[in-house]
Length: 107
Image (cartoon, rainbow, N blue to C red; front, side):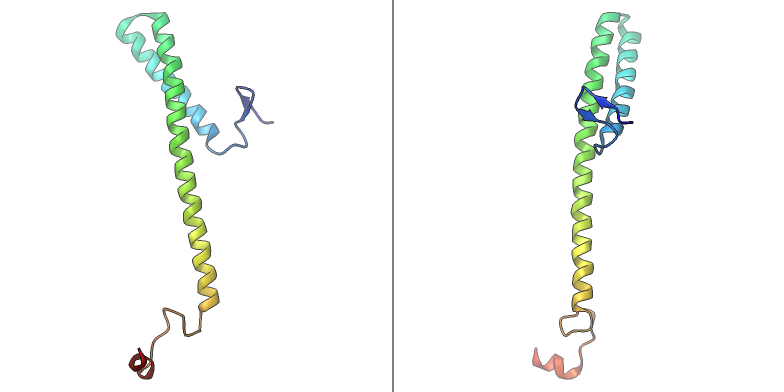
């Protein structure tokens, strides 16, 4: 079963959503408890915990999505490089092909 957070964020199917919620809840616990231990003000500590949840969740969300985009770019470049290697292997365009003496004198 899927779990929808805020009614629209499907935590199971959206990349980075699960980790963001988990880190957000941990951040809210740490910040709220830390503020309570420092000040002994319950209401303000709850406000800090909610703010900590939002900040931690959004911060990790953006970090994770950026990392995911970078990973997809690297995968796309690797896939294109593998395709080009297969395409040019054994031809005169192959960069790993050892050039002979006659080919060196032409260039």
